[in-house]
Image (cartoon, rainbow, N blue to C red):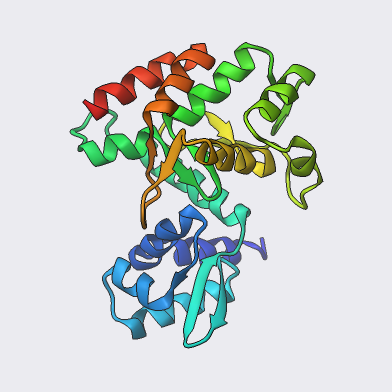
Length: 239
């Protein structure tokens, strides 16, 4: 019972609208200056500094000084996972059918979840790999088969390096918009970077939304056959 107040304190920190906006911005794993966060959250620099100090004290963000600027980033993947799960819970309480803008559709299709791929593309890709027995689902994570390791290497992923990283290797991460798991952990992060390096995905400036390139659509439709619905949806959005 003595731990109950800690839950309430953490929930209050994340639940404040301004801090929630700041945390959402930082979900792309990139650092932002305190001034940038203030602008993106629509508050004054002094107000932003107060929020940042509270989040840093609670271990939600890490702050590093560089020259005249203070750079703020999420404290780690555990914080990102917590925020993603809260987004999933919050989304479940909203109407399932409502008007969506093109920007919202693109965000749900492909985005970053901290340092790995999320959205419909990510979920369809994982389910295709599982269907082909390239990836197997465990209790709270995934494990590539031998054929799966060859597949990841063929995409430019250093599987051995991902295994040796000082973090979880291949976690399940519940996708807030799809309500299904995508691939997180060191393997998920390495896959996202490989997809970007090969021109299948492209980052957008100051956004979590990822652009799926024509090469990316071909990759989804041809190499990952069961991900074809996601590729077709992307083509419809792009059209």
